[in-house]
Figure 1 (cartoon, rainbow, N blue to C red):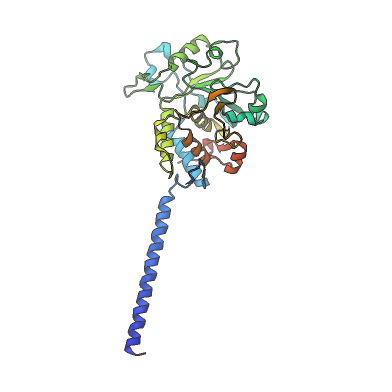
Figure 2 (spheres, rainbow, N blue to C red):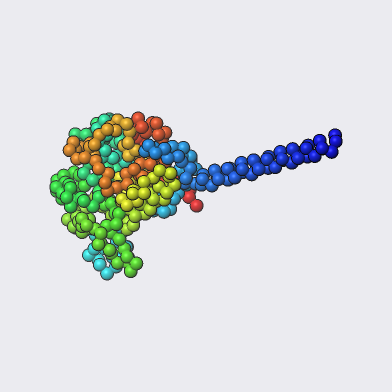
Length: 342
């Protein structure tokens, strides 16, 4: 080979080596970027159509452990430091927190969605170890659809301020009488940095109504009030989750978690398995504007609560395939007790 040919051979060889090295570096950069985007808690794809998919077991475990650690569940007891020096108030509250008194294997969380009218889940719902319902949701006349048992009932602060007043205060009515009743606490009852009660945002007097109720019916079934900041912690966890999506509406951050979200998180702490009914909406009643299965007048607005983010959150946490949820409206979740979080 002459000198000119040798020079061209060396030039081409060096060029090929440089290109190969460059491609290797580019490929490595792509791999690192992909790995960076696949951090725990972010390993799902938001489709922009109200559905998330691609959640792995590791992602579910990561989000569940965050929920377990960042949003612990308890209820207010008489040992709350803010009650010291106020025995008349303190003694109205239970000695123990709810999570120390009950634990279930299988739980049903039954939404009040209008879509429940299109299912006949009554027998399956009643077969669970515990059934949670919300607010004034009735079973009478709807047992085929929603079942007849109610073991726990979570109520928002509007009750009994404007809704369910008769059912709430009349001891002859079964609702609220033979159930574990828990009051939702978003920002209604807080404790300030000086360990004093802060009720400035309790617009519907839920704390006052709780005390009145306990004094009027001291021998009724257990009644509890979710701990201070429970709902606020749920909101922060939903915000963290929302920040991991590519198409999350930040306007949701301005809204409070729904009573349903308070209930599902509560039951994830109290149960080994949680079956939700129409919390992730099925396709059976997609075009309706109605809110409740027991009310053909009230329209659903979604104005006050972060329903969209909540539903995306449940879609990632459920172990049920989303195509099955789409058909049935039933989503199954592993309780937080099943996760060994370090």
